[in-house]
Image (cartoon, rainbow, N blue to C red; front, top):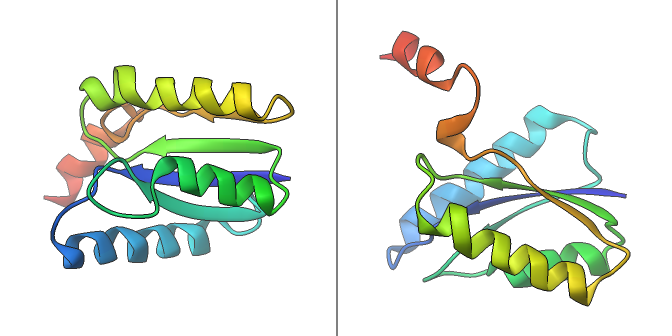
Length: 118
């Protein structure tokens, strides 16, 4: 079963975290039936944490999870922190295939799309 997790930084401001949760819901609606389980997570300052989100999807039966970093640039979280958690979860769940997708700023055509929106 395929799972998808959008992971964002997280904020002390509840409204910002609620905005991410709502966006993840809209994204899920747009993806149709590509994924059986779709969720969101936060790197810090809010829940669910990435670890909690992965654990929940595994408990729901996910065996193949795609993780989308909702970050514009490849800072420390994208380059070091997220891969570290994925490695830990691969060790915890040997049956789990977990893939780190390109971060938002690295998506092909993103800059062109954004330029057309502004």
